Length: 198
Image (cartoon, rainbow, N blue to C red):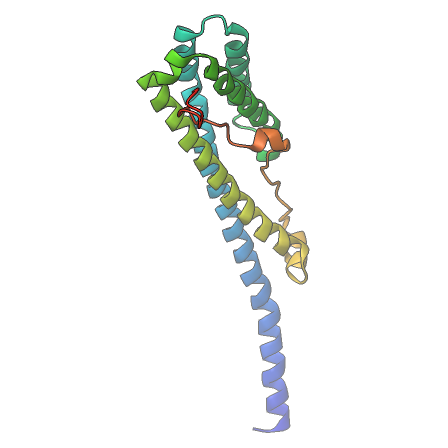
């Protein structure tokens, strides 16, 4: 091969690289964006499941603790508000889900004053479902946020940021609880205490 041919091969290879690299980066952005949307869908499913469990919790608690009306109305209102914002993007939806988690924690804390309710098989099953749902929400949120973090890193690093800017791939919002007290999963341990007083 002559020097001219080698140079021609290098120029063609460089041009191919300049054409192929942006296509590969674009396709990766599309895959990551789809993965984020899919992981948000799973988070949304779990949040909706929690919304669906709230009326059963309210009905069960009402049967045993009718004078806790204000607490039950607060959790019902928080659920309605969160459900009304299901179509909102994750960032806008956070505060409504935070309120619902806080109201739910308040209801579960008030249950401690009702031994008959705590011993009810229906309530225990419902409480177990809520705990499992909260765990699934946390796992789905971690998966979603991990995908958003990887995507946002690519959006902001060179050279992929050039492709992101050219094709309108912008950073995505995380879905995180802001209040650490609200972020904690509500305590649902209804077993006897160490001193036997529970």
